[in-house]
Length: 413
Ligand SMILES: CC(=O)N[C@H]1[C@@H](OP(=O)(O)OP(=O)(O)OC[C@H]2O[C@@H](n3ccc(=O)[nH]c3=O)[C@H](O)[C@@H]2O)O[C@H](CO)[C@@H](O)[C@@H]1O
Ligand SMILES: C=C(OP(=O)(O)O)C(=O)O
Image (cartoon, rainbow, N blue to C red; front, top):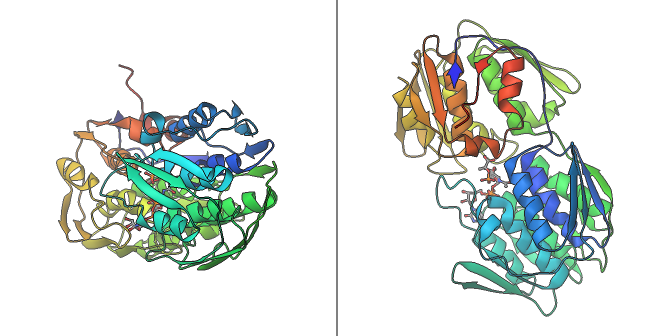
């Protein structure tokens, strides 16, 4: 529930990155001793992954922002249903278990299904490494007598496929080269963990990643990078409410595409060493935004950005070149009075005030977009349902927004 119209003011600290955490947790399965992850975010996806690891036989303890994973007793039991269906990143179990046990059966992933999200590039990579991959009643079965390095050219620079292939290839015989690899910061984070475990991965963060297989991986301690998408969401919320917020504990370089767009609109953005200050203004210019793979504008900030662009003067065009139809937030924003039409892979947004309404989040970032929209509304109460999606990716959203002066609360049913 949001009673909007208040500018956000103050400082918000950003937690570790969801998209790193939910790759690093399964990566720990490749080790033969304890892995400790620091700066772990409190998210439902992390809780689900922790339960999955326990089901596989790992000893997991999670206190505060630290998780200890002892994978020494893990076995590769089939996981066709249950928790694997609750999140997208359960696909990393395929690479991790294939790497360690040469066999795995994992149900097709769940998560935010705003459009069909194929995993053909993951499978192509596993097959190139020598695995036989079959789809058995909606579960993927992977088996390899031996994993051997290969050269793999990804048709699309997929984050998940790049990480999944890295996971399996760390335990393959010989060298693997991934070409057209995704370059997102979370890929560097996973490679850093794997290298600390004893892997040999070079080039993460570029389009060519080279992996020399090793026979053993050991435990280690690793601190997760800050969540650039959570950070970007608060930057957008600060601008949308015409507030003044310091977003602390971030890597400003990870947010450059957003920072540039905000400045183009007329938002004040000051980059400091590990924080960014966002200062709103009374008038914003319309801009065109293209969501692309990193270092382009992140698709995961496309929906929140749509809400901000309703506050700009004139007509903005926001196109998503990563997903062709990630627009489930649009009809809900229209219910709030937004003038938006979807044309192909673009949303055409005409600026104007929003009104309070009952709206429904049907995926994580759509949820964030609706909350931001609600924060801009000057009269009435906006009710956002489907908050379980928001819990997948935002650590303490309501508490953080309240500490910035927002009148937001969660209705307990
Ligand atoms: C858990 C996680 O890290 N999720 C992120 C990850 O998702 P995810 O890893 O699923 O996204 P990908 O980078 O794989 O997808 C990018 C594009 O490639 C296509 N594709 C992908 C794989 C494949 O085998 N075949 C294929 O065609 C997808 O449909 C999409 O159009 O990156 C996305 C793009 O930055 C983000 O929105 C998600 O937040
Ligand atoms: C789409 C997202 O996540 P996932 O890939 O985990 O569904 C997201 O974080 O915006």
